[in-house]
Length: 56
Image (tube, rainbow, N blue to C red; front, side, top):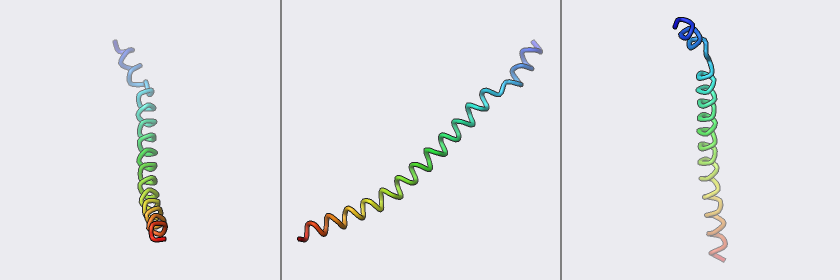
């Protein structure tokens, strides 16, 4: 039983999976922030283009 507990304590596979999950979550947050920032700018730009084309 002691050997099983020692082996369980030494196992770091779960920690690695959690680290990869945290990295993936941070990357997703960065992508969402970038898309929202660019999306607002693109919306304004295409709105201006639409206004110019509609007025002619």
